[in-house]
Length: 153
Image (cartoon, rainbow, N blue to C red; front, side):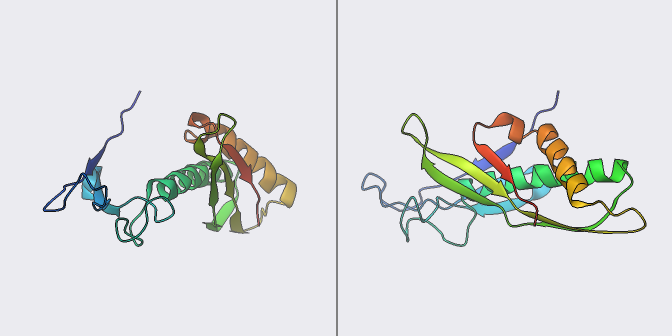
C-alpha cells in the first residue's frame, strides 16, 4: 500500500475574514518540490476572491481522472505491442446536483485523441477495448461516484 501527500497552504494576511470577501488563492505543494497555484473556481466564488488563472479543485479532479486514464491506456497499449505517438484528451467535467440534491461532479467525459505508428495499428474496436480496460484499471475512476464517459476522437 502506498501513501500520497499534498500540502495545501493558505494564509489570510491582512485581509478581513469574517466578511467572507477574503482571497481563496492558495498553493498546492507536492513531493519533488512542484508547487501549483490554486484557488476556488470563479464559477463558485466570484472574482476577485477567486483567481482565474490558478487551478481549482474541480479542474484538478478532471485532470487527475484524465491523467490516470492516460497512464493506464499507455501501459496497456505498450504491453499489447502498439506504438502510441501522441495522446491528447480534451476532458470535461460537469458540476450539477446529484440524486441527493447536492452539487457534485456528476459526469466527466474523457475525449482522448490517440495517434499510433508502426506495423501494428489498432482499429477503432481495439482502441475502444483499450480504453475500457484502462478505465477498469484507473485508480481514480475506481475511487469516485461520478459517471465517466470515454469518447475517443
